[in-house]
Amino acid sequence: MKPDINEDLIRKLERLAMISLAEDEREKLTADIRRILDFMQSLDEVDVEGIEEMVSPVSRPMETREEIPEHFFDTESIIKMFPDISKRYLRLPPIKGDE
Amino acid sequence: MDKSVLKKSLEELTRSELPLESFYRERISRFNGEINAFTEVREANTDCHEGPLKGIPFAAKDNIHSRGFRTSCGSRMLKKYYSPYSATVIDRLGRAGACLIGKTNMDEFAMGSSTENSCYGASRNPWDTRRISGGSSGGSAAAVSAGLIPFALGSDTGGSIRQPAALCGIVGFKPSYGLVSRYGLTAFASSLDQIGPLSRSVKDALDVMRVIAGRDPKDATTVGAERELFDHNLEPDLSGKKLAVPKEVLEYEGLDGRVYGSFMDMIERIRQEGGIVDEVSVPSIKHVVAVYYLIAPAEASSNLARYEGTRYGFSELSSSYLRSVGITRDMGLGEEVKRRILLGTFTLSSAYYDAYYSKALKVRRILDSELSALFGDYDFLVNPTCPVIAPKVGEITDPLVFYLMDIYTIAANLSGLPSISIPAQPADNMPVGFQITGPRMKDMDVLSTGAAVEAISPFLKDGIAPIPERWDE
Image 1: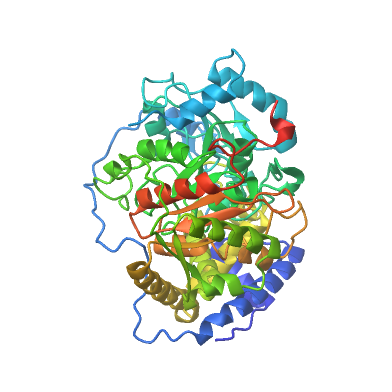
Image 2: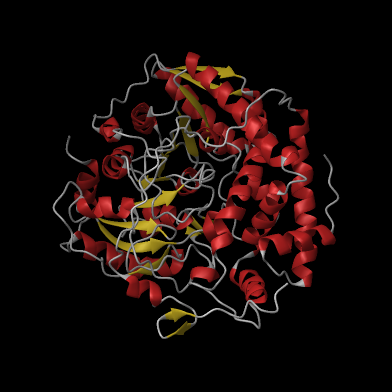
């Protein structure tokens, strides 16, 4: 499982993760991720045939709760945090023009 | 409930006539400039209620929300973010009478082992301010260690409570996964994160656990009716207790000889008290760093998708939405966070999912089975908390070297086990932690044995972790 970690792959990951790295950052992170994944190769020696994934330490099924709308007592404190606002509405940059 | 040592120790500590809160505020204003443990200190947001912790001030790591306080997570992305609500743990401590007076420094989004990844700069180790305080709850550890606050909350995803507690010479406890609500804790890796106390004695940690543990309808992973788990007194007794030391721990080449010496000193003391210590093999321990750094970044890449700068936080608006998000995330997030998001995005991608993420989850299962089998024969697993003493600020720059510092703490997170770090024999005047890990939900046993180890530790004075002379005025 030795993938080729190059800058093209990192560019693809940037698009998926929605992070636009600067050029010098990309170079450094590419090298770092290559080294880190090399280190992960140590798992190659473990035989996982027939082993189930463990996604959580909690083995029982988790209880879900009813989805009931609740009134939040302080919406003003949330609105105050909007980076760009127009008449109490959240303003977003235009979606048009994005691929 | 017996009389709280927390209060008793405070009575002894507080030699001034000032009320507790003023006493600590004064210490913070005097010393925080040198230690950089706090990111914010302000008025408590509620009056102190009647309760078992009435009037006791505390601090919380800056990824735990408290209404009216800033919750920056050590990130430029949230440097101006003020919480509109409080975490369950903050509400519970408030109802028990404790007063939150400040938030503490941390590695950005809890990703790091030194607080050097904080937008506020590194917290300093009170035992030697040229050195790191550990991380990611390094601000909490430094604040408690220097006596700037009686106790603090931290979060532990791969050792982030225990490692800084070890490096700063205090007690750090990570409860079993599911015992403490994560509601209001900024999510990093949801299957590993757990909130816990950093304090100057095991009894203090227990007093805090009695308040913060318990089921919470707002966190589906919390376990029902387990709050009573802590309604017992500590029974510190090592006689006949069976402790296992994995040989993979002692064979690890990165283990500093001085830390090994401190660890073996404690093993000898435990044997003198009648404890039985055996060397065993837990083969998967040598894979925990690889497993953790596949699972945690994968979960983080999903959890941190919310920081895109349109609803709150840092925002760099551009000509279009996607461009804005890309630039905002590049400028708002630090290098380590971006490294982990990209790594997680890679390991979750369909082409590599089986080879990396799924494989890591399977090795996690193998480790969990090995630990379950171990706990069939032994009461506890013990090892040094951290393989090294606190490095100097700026000394380590290689991310892999930092990742390997977590080698002894990660297993407890992967399996959701209770684990505590107790100060042991120091090395070169720097603190060293001794870690005790137990079976799931045996938190009270871990605390009791922690108290027994604390009682024979040469580091503690009168049952309390000492404040370094420099700050003991």
